[in-house]
Structure formats: structure tokens, C-alpha cells
Length: 506
Image (cartoon, rainbow, N blue to C red; front, side):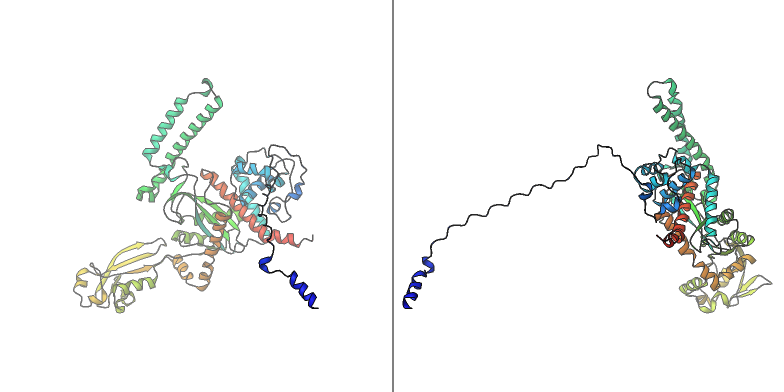
């Protein structure tokens, strides 16, 4: 046993007696990875492939509701209408862009059946105004049969849309005439392109552009006469200008302030489901005179006027109140009357004692005068009329009576004496003002903001109707009608078509 232990001790080496380890080889650098290999894009080629046109779009795509049947061999007006409606739904208002999309966008070839559109889309959009108006009326009739239009309540409002003109293109008469003379001289200097050398086609195009400029400047001078004849233009010299590139545009005050070349778009929207039942464009930057044309537009499109028209106080004038009453339309809107609470706060701010508020002044019909609480007489002075047709009879005390009054500190009259106003309304206006104090009228008026703002926001944000891409009032009206037509189809698609599609078994 001792021999074995002795043998084990001989085989155990101390750490210092261990043989040296061979040095480790240095770690080698990892081999670089080869670069990733991708297939290069070869665009210098032509591809032939079979396309199932019907499979380009999913079943619930909007364009199927617009057309209703896939491509036709010949491009007929129904397909061109469908192209424009779908283009507006995608905020496309350029004819060239529509033509480009017909080559690559799935929806456009589906509409045309992959046929080449060989008709000028820009001309089709603005031509045939009577057929376009009939199309809009037919759509409203179809929506009415669907139960989407009731005409029980219609909200009318206006919105400013920027014109296709720069503010720098607006000039006064002197500048316009100078530009016209220069343009006419240029046309005369160009001569006949057939008698000159060079590219006749280019020269003819230049001459045509020069003649069109002369025509626009002549039209601008004619439009300037209309602007100068307007009452507001006579008062505001800054408004006596016209654009030389878009003469029918006007400088208006948009909602964000300032002045900008714009058109005033008037929209009538049915409250029931938010369908536009009337649309028009005016050069007037104010809404005072637009209620009667709006009622006539709805009457023309729907065959009858709305039962109730809801407007803001920009439309409530004496003439509009009487016109609505004559047509049997229940007008709901603002009154723009002085709020008694506001008047009371003004008296409080001036430090007038409550004993000298207007209700404590006594009226004497026989002498058409008032007596103040101090016993001083306030004789009749003048009568003013406001936009509602309200007669405001002004009564004012004599300045010496107020200066020598012992109660002057409580009454706080002005330097020329204390005055009060007695309002007298026409019977129809009085009935309107009384109606607007009722709970039912106030509840109806609350529909104005959400309905009008939703429609205007959809037209501007969804359809891109923030600035017109065409010039001239006739073309602008066409673009507004196309946008409203698209809006109504989108609402019908949302409210009816998609629900019917979901109900159809797969």
C-alpha cells in the first residue's frame, strides 16, 4: 500500500514543475462576407401579359358604384362621366393626370375596359352645361327615391374658394389699359405666321396666345366697370381692381383673414343625410343677396322649395325674410339685434345707476317723446334703419337740461345729453324675431354649424376644392358641380351601396 502511494507522489508534479504550454495561435480575422446580390431592375424592356380587368379591383371598390359595369368597347359619355367622378373623389382635377392614370391605375383601366381615351377630357368637363345640370337633377331624384332627401330642413351656407389667379395680377384701370396697349402692339408686330419663315406651328401658337391675352385684358376692363359700379367699391378704393389673368375673379375676405382672389361658392345641404341639393357660384363676396337665388336653385333641382331653410345671420335681411315668407319657406337664422344683456353691461361699465336704465324712461305717444326719471324731456330726433328693416327711433335730451341736472352723476349722460332708442319692427320681421326666441327655432338653428361645416370640410379636404384649377366663371361653376356630384355619390355609396353589397351572399 505504501508503495502505491509513493508511486502516486512521484507522478504528481508541482505547478512550478509543469512543462510550458505551447503558445496559442493568434485569432484570425473573420473572412469578409460577400456583398448581397440583388436582381437589377431592367426598365428597358416591354412586357406582354394577360390582364383580367374584372380582377383589378376588389368587390367593394368605389369605382364599381360609380360605373356599375366594367369597360365598354367604345368610350361613351357615361364612361367619361365616371372617369371624372372617380378622379374628383381622389382629388384629381387635371385632365392630363386622368389620362396618365388610365395607363397604370387599376380603377381607371377598369372603367374604360383598358380602352384608350381618345376624347379631350378637359373639353368634356366644361361642355354641355344643360346635360350636366340634368345629370345632377337626375341624381337628386334617385337619391330622393332612396329616401336620402326629405327637404324638411335645408342648411344653406357660403364658402370662399381661391381662384386660379395671383393677387399680383389685380390692377387698376390705368395699369390694365397700359398692358392692353402693349399686348395689342405685340399682336400687330407679330404679323402673319404664314408669311414668315421658321416653325409656323410655333409662331401660330405664340400669336394665338398673344390674341388671348388681348381678349382677357379687354374682358378685364369690362369687369372693372362692374366692380366700380358696386356700392362697396365706391367706398373702398382697394376694391377697384381686376385680375388680368382671371377677370371674373374677385378679391374677397376668406375665413383666415386678409384678401385673396376668390369665388363665393353657395351650398344648400339637406339635413336628413347631408346630401347637397343646390350649388352655385357668385362674384359677390357677401351673402346678403344669396338666399333668394339659393331657394330658386333648390326649386329648380328638386321641383319644390325646402320646408325650412337654416342660415346664419349673414343672410337675415328684411328682403330675405319677406322673400322666404312669400315662398312659404320657414326661415331660421340669426337676428343681428342688439343683445339687451350687452346693452346692460355697457350701462354698468359707464356707471349708470339702475334707476336710469331705459325701462324707467316713460314714452308719450301723443308727443312722440320720452321723459327721464328726473322729469326731463327727450324729444324725437331721428330714425335709423338696419339690415333687418328695423326702425330705430332716437330720442335725445337737450344738453343744457342734462348739464344742470342734479342727478347727472347717476344718469351719466354724454356731452350732448342722454339718448335712448325705441325699436319698431315690420310685422313680418317682428314675427321672425319672436319665432327665433322659441325653443323649437333655437333647436333647429343648432343644425346649421355641423351640417354646413361638414359639407364644406368634405369638399375642401376630401375633394381638394380649396383652389380652382380653371379660370372663368363658367368653368368654375362646372368644377363646383362636378365636386358636388362626386360628394353626393360618395354619400350614397357610404349610406346605401356598401350596405347592399354586404347583404349579398358570397
